[in-house]
Image 1 (cartoon, each protein chain N blue to C red):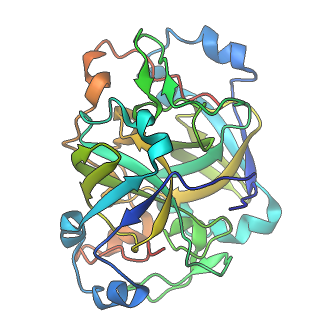
Image 2 (image 1 turned 120 degrees about the vertical axis):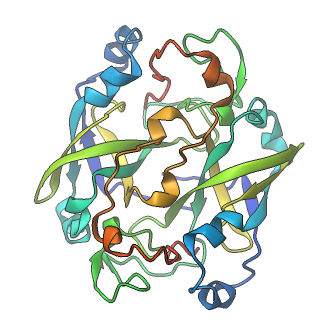
Length: 157
Length: 157
């Protein structure tokens, strides 16, 4: 299956190192990280009607990942986890998914917050966040032990 | 970018027509639709630790889609919408995303509910549903008008 980028993410995290320095950030700080989705102009018509959704699902490529692992070592965890129980970029298909908050769209440029991707990350798809995506009673497995609200920053592309 | 399936979805919806017949189903009925994720055995080790998550994010291929459209006509809506404001399968990259509820895993087979994919849909990735995916104050754009709880069944692969 062949897929191609529809745009690119502009992020406050310019390189992997910027991201690692922010490990002590809380989940809440990530919610405040602002960035911009630049959609290639040929796809701009497809953005019609997104403006009144508060949140967007971004499917992107972990373009810096070079490893196809079945296990991951999430930060602040200290254990070897099955990769499908983590958001590690080093997974069988290097696909990422983040829900961002839509701040403002101007033509093919969408200002968002909640950015945890690196500068230049290729965007593969944008979907509206719908009621079916909101699971209020969800339980978070091994993450539940980490109630100190440390970041989930293994979602690095 | 080349990606390959890590498994296949077994669904109560055996063909597109089954899905269309269910248009009158409510969102709640979809939550009850049970199916099975069959993960190819080479990837089974990566499923370690997923069992205590209540919900999983499934990234899949809309393998029956043959159209790459910028607009969609969602059911029960009657309007032409920008494809990125819909979950239509006919989009620039035929990638789907559904949050399912994990019922039980036995080795490489995961029983889930909330299935809105068709039988045989290729699974590309499984991710844990985390607190960052839960947006309690989300607003749902043009979907908000559809308070009659009709299904969101344009997520057909």
